[in-house]
Length: 193
View 1 (cartoon, rainbow, N blue to C red):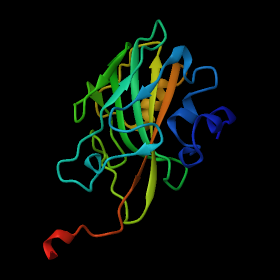
View 2 (spheres, rainbow, N blue to C red):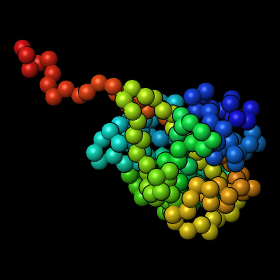
View 3 (tube, rainbow, N blue to C red):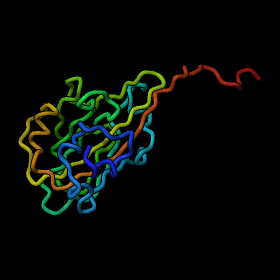
View 4 (cartoon, rainbow, N blue to C red):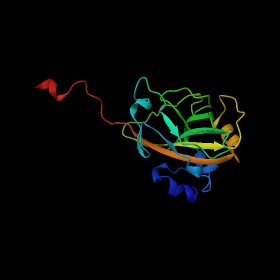
């Protein structure tokens, strides 16, 4: 894990295989004030179950970003699970084709272009954890100096190769999710009064 990234991410979010670890640098991280945020959770906060496999009609969380540095041609979002074992983190979302300006993705909005997640689907991969486990998800934003020519459905490897050498700014947003180890009850204490 690069030194500049260990100071930018909390320990639970540090995985040497993250896209930002491979493509970013101290000079581009947060360059020009680029920042990624979400109205659904604070940085380092808890991901709501409505964005996970624990709820039936779950969707991707909403994201917002500030204006990227001048000259940015396109923005890319990559979401990975930093709690994954092995060399590469589990990939939950690959999004590109976002205009190189301040913007947002609404909750459940279909992005312009998506690539294949770790299950080979071109959609938000719902976090599905064993009971009692906590995982840390890293939402990564990249500003590029050229528009991508990748076709929808590209793999993570293809997207990272296309980004290599073209990232002018990056930022990361972290969320945690803990799957409850308790079964939900169909009753409450008021039922017994």
